[in-house]
Image (cartoon, rainbow, N blue to C red; front, top):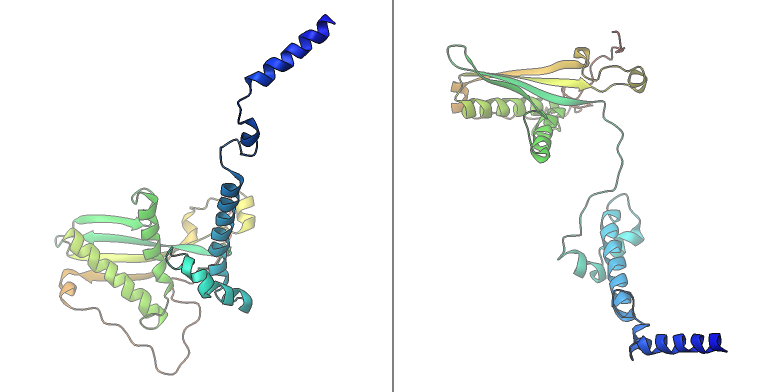
Length: 249
């Protein structure tokens, strides 16, 4: 009997310690958000993520159904003000055959080297966004054919870079070399080959500019009328002859 009375007393004490609004509090989440607020927040997150994915998926190649939904007024009232209506794709490209480098030397009139280096360079360009900007400048050597034939495009870019370096360093003479750095093949990686082996680098184009050239505008060479455009871009975009690179090579 004494044990039963003790058990009843504990139950009464536990019940008395609970607040009067205990039943109402039970309907709320531990964070204090009521059910309607949690449901609204969840719906907003789902809607936002749906719009984030709908816009890229509406770009070619695309499904007409997705395109109609993404470009409808029922979606664009939200996507346009928040700049979510982007035209990019979700993609995973194949690794490139190699990368582009620009090596340069700027000299004074008496032959002194005022500045030399290469870009992109992790040692010279920092932070990472600045390095990426220089990487994109070097990648222009792929020759997009925007102004003329791809090779003419690449040479025009190189001349512009040389003139910029001349003006920046108050130089008399500048030489730039476009260098193709071939990526290692899978079997070379497995063999432990050095990705910076000198044989993986090939100069594909060189330009020279002098201080007096700064006084004349760069001339865009027009595309040849009729004939087909060169395939594969400029020499800067072409991969060099692949010489197998081994550990002891």
